[in-house]
Image 1 (cartoon, rainbow, N blue to C red):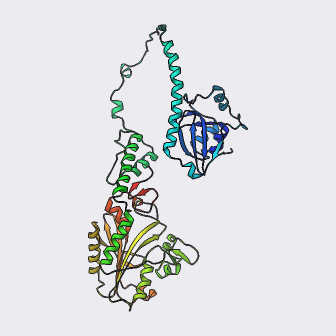
Image 2: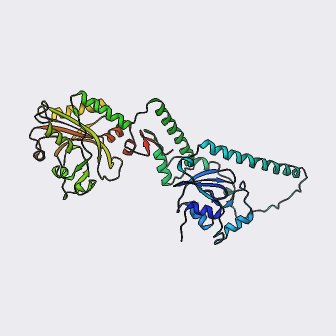
Image 3: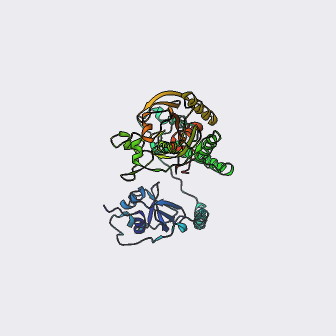
Length: 438
């Protein structure tokens, strides 16, 4: 079957079928690159995607509807003609006008004024009809007596309405409705779908009002992005303690990853975003730190202290604590006083500065060998190492060192009790943990 686009179907039929199955006549229709704005004969104005496989496109293509809209006052002949499949093949009912995006996104107030004007016109016609009906109502009506029939074999309990049924019944939610509600919940808010009695529309309306107010308050009082604010706070912390901030390239030679022990034959190499045969997006900040330590050795005073905050890219599995684009903090000290005790003290000072609880456990990894993992409950915040390690030789490093790497999105998730890591990331769906699909 030829799946025409929605604007083509509207132009062909001259009708629109709403979610409730009402058949509306179309007064005006404008289309942009992706959307259509439709003005009904009854004054209702909607904006929908210009899709070939949407519910409305299927209903128009199959000429299906529940009943006609009374306010649109579509002639019965046109409705019958629409109901006949195969009819109206070459007839154009509505001219669909393509407009620029700037003109398409009109002010909502203008749309509402148009709808109000059409509604007022409809009200005047209805008032005249009501006057005629009032005259007819003055005439005495004939009394109709319906025969009383007695139902047989009907238990007495079924005849009595259960008044408490509606009050005690729980509301059933689809999976898409659950996902929508969960995306609108704020930090610390919870909902039990098994015990919830409110409808989906009631819950959604309440949450939308709360999120909109939070965004307005944030705009009036703070206006700082949490991820950017945390980066500035961390920068201040390490600069005040004598660390030098660096910014290394995001695109690096893949040869750097081979020096880190992640060659073509390693499984971890499958997680790297390759640009071409020679270049890739950095999956970690360590190559940049190694390069700087080698270049600053014998130039800067002992011990050398450096740190970097920047984006990293790694093909991660989906989950509440993983991202493919994330922000890392790596700090490193080379030379004297590079011991596990000093590393743990610096980590403790850093996390107390941020107000985050943690514990340290021993672990190991493919790249660095034995590591010190910093945990918040079951979430890993950091992996820390005390060198030297065999890999140092590939970077020209021959001095003791210590360092750690933290994921900023995970720090935000813990600090603000976000339900998933995406709320603290660079996202089009959230701002400072608040859902923006409002």
